[in-house]
Image: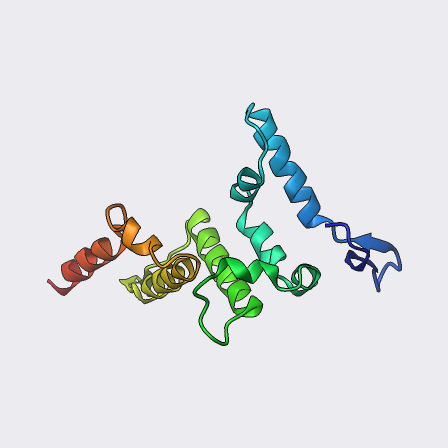
Length: 159
């Protein structure tokens, strides 16, 4: 989080800049946890991180410092997939989350229902989680209603 390679000279201003985003986010998470009166643990710090953190974590400059170790969490990562593909998915999930937070449409095209984007993102997220643990999706069956809701809405549109 404080490696010399994270410090560079800004081409425009000629000033030294340190990319300390990851460090600041970890410290912020530790403070939030401590402020709740809970013991700070690595697991809690990880759980507290945002999609922005994970996006930055899988960017080339941070990932190179960790020599590929972050990909080890993905025990079922498909052959040919690596840091770039993982980060691309994190970016897509972050964009979906942002669209939802900003009340942007995710299931309408030209004022008509179109669930293709949502279905595609559901598949991407499901695969991503399965790369971490193949039992995740089966364990979510009881609470996962996304496909049922989409199917119900699509059936309404056909009527």
